[in-house]
Image (cartoon, rainbow, N blue to C red):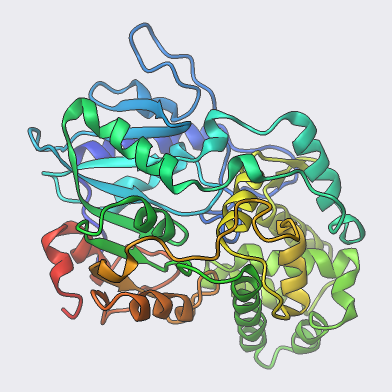
Length: 429
């Protein structure tokens, strides 16, 4: 299997940030949150003490101390500008790893794996929660709300201040690029990052969209599609394992309305980005009373809901809720048992627009060009989400090669990423 090529600078950044996050893993019995907040939450960034003359930010970690890396805040959002490894270029690739609920530090950990061209810089734009985190009272309310199935539908902390604002994102891009007189040559959007880069860049900027979340629609459609895909995949994973199929079938009944069913549903959601982890989680449902099963499901459920330790909630959760509740209109489509759990975790305001929800596609989508990559059995963003992009924009072509899993950057997509922006002219190689 082909692996992405790393440029010298991004490889060094990835190594330094990886060491930092590994040293600062969450304690307690909570699982370490996963890589995509459409399913689970990333590790909160660790504040750093910056030396004199370095960027005065509390996010970004060690990377913001490296000479040549520009970490700054624009329009209430964190931005990181990485210079081209070959030097001298004023063209950059805008990269958004999705979420919502991601951190800049996590993005820096992953950017080296993209194998982007050495003659292009990289721009990362983070989320408002890192600059203006939710207050402790909000996080305490969320922790109480998510502790048990019986309380998940109670009033949630208002996510409106942490919604995705396309105009702020655009202003952050402009603010970050202005001092370097740089321009965006291409944009890479993974999962919900596809929505953000499409909404915040000019139609002339070609796009590489990987496992994209839908460009528009209702939240019930998004949740319902994910829930259906997860349920069907769990049945397939069970195969002929005794007790597994019936356990999964009960996920669609009243059984999910107790704490055990609630944790099992969340565990499947948390394992969704990884086919191997998902299969293991589904098979474990055949032995629900085993101590090892209960512990594993508990860890996965915590990862899916941005919890750790004794149930404390990471601030990323509020951004996750705000991003999805603020972009997709509520809708009324039935979502099923797992969908009910997902809807409960989101806790979106009932009235359309209460958190800024529009349900509309990014502006000028009709004129966009580029490639759309999908994974055949993606349980985070099912393939139908990708088809919504290509149907809305004739210039966005579905790639012939499939991703190996949600948002993966190996195989054929590595060649496209390594040849940006010219490689986006054809998606059929």
